[in-house]
Length: 216
Ligand code: CA
Image 1 (cartoon, rainbow, N blue to C red):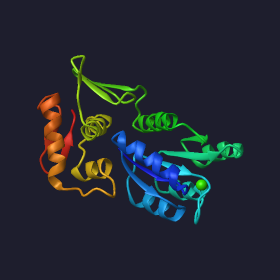
Image 2: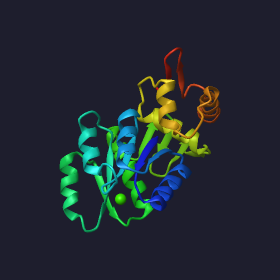
Image 3: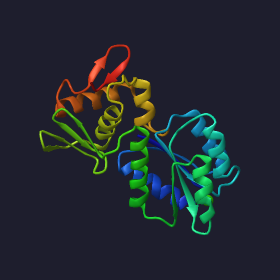
Image 4: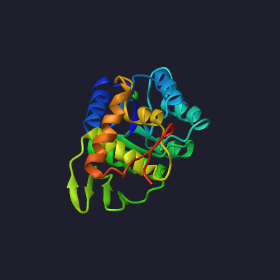
């Protein structure tokens, strides 16, 4: 999962980004509205965390422009004295909002719910044969036994599982699993896929030659 955070308070931006990365997300950041809109328009994010009050272009303007071209789930960050923002945000096409100051765990829970809704999943748990993926706890079990995955391996499994039955291209995986600061060495993805197969079974992820990967 790749998330964009648009926030002009450096400390807040850093703490959200760091916590999300620790949770295995690929994270891009933008310190102002112009940069935020540029990235939102040009990259395919799984969700965007968007502050309302931003230099250069405010959050409403970004949202308005974005909604003309994309359905990327958007979580707005509003200030407590902007209660009317809530209504405005949902009218303009925001998917959810949190009021500042907020706890990081609450923000993450809302983000996960957003991503799940956008994939049309109503529960936290995705079951594929003997494999269970809990997207709230971010863990995986095989025949009821927990399986140790690295954060990146988990992200790979979750992304494929949320797109079950579809062929996901390598390009899509690079875009959703790695952020702008990571060098995407082409063999790295193969290493993650190979490790997941060792842990969850060789047939769990199917390779479609010349196309990409798929969970059937
Ligand atoms: Ca701000």
